[in-house]
Amino acid sequence: MRTLSLFFLCSILEMPCLFAQGNRTDLQEKLNKKQFREIVSETGPLLATGSVDAETLYLIGQAYEGLLKYREAYGIYQQCLEKDSLNIDLINTLGRTAVNLGRAGEAEKYFIRVVENDSTNFYATYQLARLYFQMGDYEKSIDKYEELEADDPENSTILKNLGDCYIRLEDYNTGSTYYYYAYLNNKENAGIAHTLVNTFLRMGGNYIPEALEICDSALIYNPDNKNLLRSKAMGLYMNKNYNEADTLYTRLMEEGDSTLITLLYGGASRYYGGYPMNAIEPLEAAYEVDSTSVDVCLLLGASLGKTYDRKRAFQLFNEAEENMKPSKGLVLKLEQFRAETHHRDGNYEVSSRMFYKLWNENKERLDFLHKVLMRYTPAKIKDYSSENDKQRGLFLIILYVKESLKANEDPGNLRFYRSLLKQFYEEMFFNSAREYTALSPDGKTSKVTVEEIKELLDRIPDVQ
Image 1 (cartoon, rainbow, N blue to C red):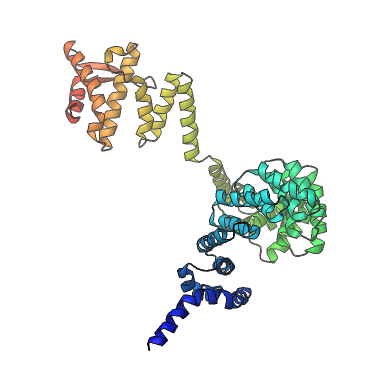
Image 2: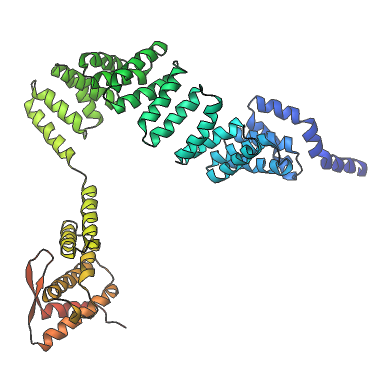
């Protein structure tokens, strides 16, 4: 029994080494068969020993990566690197896994480490180019892609990616040129052709006929490609070939294309082609998809107006007009930014009127009122530069305190204004005045009584 226990103990101690040497081939076979879960399950206890060789670790890391468990894979690959720090393929793998984890900075360091050791390493250079593009550093991305292009000037993928970079930089001429060369080197690629055509359509003018020619060529290789058919239909519409555009849009709709753009421009092609009655059906369908679209409402209303339902046409025109109005939120921001700019420019009366108007239209926004108040709240009322400023200050303090209390603001936060109100109250008492004139930012006058000020003072705690 003792001999058996000793043998069992020795077996356990030797197991990691035996597993690494004897079963690595089995792991590789399972990896080739994509049996990732089996690998992870059976090697879990092995990893816990901490004595796994680099080759076996790498296979386990690949299994975790195959299961999209990038965090686990990354940790295992890092262990591999500690055992084999000069392995270029491993460093590339770490960079790729870092990208999948969203660790762009770490990925960049790994790929740079590779190219510093081997400037011709295609994979690392390509991954750097892609990484810089994802990070929004398009100039750096272009530099890397141009390195690759120099060695392979007819590679359509590299040319297309260069085009993407220039389009992001809003250099459409250069971008479309790269797309064109990518297309010439791979005319069967519908994706490249579609990207080029859409860029030409975006550029408009003389590029539209070129876009249509490329569509025709690309459709020879991909006759049923929906994206190319949509692009050709749009090109025909933009070129005012409405009947031809209608033919294509009709085909797309018959084949089940119910996207808004197909329904809208299919209807528009029929309307502008002189068939408003036929335009109604696709435009009604477009209205069901998006009843807030100005174009849909206008075209459907115009089609109905030319046919049989002018009452609904007018309703649609009213909807279109309502939808043309800018959003309330954007209008609010516009006026706020204008008011702030006037304030910074020293036009205080203008900015005060604007902020006061904004508050009147948005009573919950006490911050607008506060922006006006800040201009008219000195430490002591004797510091007001003019009688008008003093009257404005009185109006704004009274208003702000009342609105703050109405909104259940903490009265303790109003102690600064209590001090000013007290000064007004004491001055009125000293002058035997029952009321003072107050002046609003929009120039209207009103009266503030001493009793009104006393009531507010009683509601605000005194300064401790």
